[in-house]
Image (cartoon, rainbow, N blue to C red; front, side, top):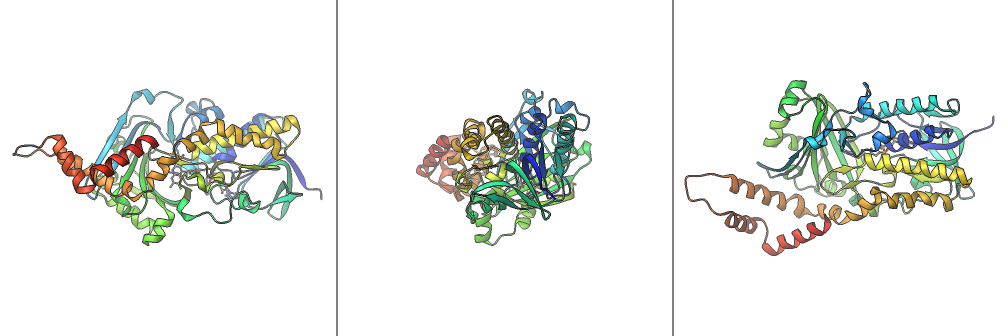
Length: 442
Ligand SMILES: Cc1cc2nc3c(=O)[nH]c(=O)nc-3n(C[C@H](O)[C@H](O)[C@H](O)COP(=O)(O)OP(=O)(O)OC[C@H]3O[C@@H](n4cnc5c(N)ncnc54)[C@H](O)[C@@H]3O)c2cc1C
């Protein structure tokens, strides 16, 4: 029997893969997307806020879709420093963010990815390739087919499928990217993290009253400090329609070094007096854990293309976590779009060699994805230093505690409080040095 041949094969039906698929479907390119999960989203974990407006490019006016599977749009941001008893937050809320296309929307991946896959299927059905493009689920791509040093297809479920080009959108466990030597076999655990997350269900009224939400507005809260028991990392809490997603992202090497268990640290985070007040009465309806990149560019594949192949999304370790937000899904979406656009260009010139596919790298370099990763590498590395998740949050909380304390005695001036607090947790030279580094990094 003759093996099937496609214009493109996409490995992985997560956000990167589906985004690439949407572009190919719109441009009448026959393609095969292969996803190992029973449906898109079955195997995926995110916090998760999908930042940016690329979703509106893929599904115009998605917010008007009655089935639109986003949970809430974000108009409320909060960054919280914690010690064992206190929380000091920088809080920003604005109706400026209330109008579409939204700055960011919360999503639950098992619902969102499935909806996006349906949208891709609709685009396929409308295209001239309705009988030539397929989304295949429950199928694992076992290996890439390589002939004369170029990727020519994939082997999946014991069958061979050939294509002009393969887009690897296989996520952070990028075994196929490693098979062809683009990624080193061994990625240091220092550059990888473990994300653990629970979804807690609330009565909708309770949730909206507690977090001051109206209709579809939502809040994204990042945390740094005593919650991780000295392990590198931080926490998050995002509001969904009737649930909150709460979790931690923890340095893998540090977890191992300090012999801590992610789920025990998550319990500790939830038990923090300030956090416990936020989630009181929530019923756990989902628990998940997943490896996640740290955003350190040293973990990226040595190249993102080769003859006949492109690497997109977290398979390429495209992610940024510089303290302000985790940006993995938007990077996956954008790189998926750029990978597909590069395939369109390669089809126009009839050349799928590295000489043409290098345009993908150029597109990424010109995009916010690689520009942000490069610009904020110093912030990513600074965040990994123990002082940032141990002493600094304590200093900030101590400052808050002293500043907001009102007693029946003469009150110290702010500068006196500051001097005393700095002396307790750090020193002026150290603080000045850190402030200078943070100033440069951000
Ligand atoms: C706890 C946690 C919180 C996070 N929070 C956020 C957040 O708030 N915002 C944000 O933007 N990002 C967040 N991220 C990161 C984000 O989830 C990822 O960056 C994003 O999912 C990457 O998308 P992707 O499509 O590249 O990969 P994935 O979503 O991992 O998709 C890869 C797909 O490929 C499939 N696959 C893999 N190998 C094969 C194979 N051989 N054959 C067939 N199919 C295969 C998998 O089943 C999967 O469906 C978070 C991650 C974690 C773990």
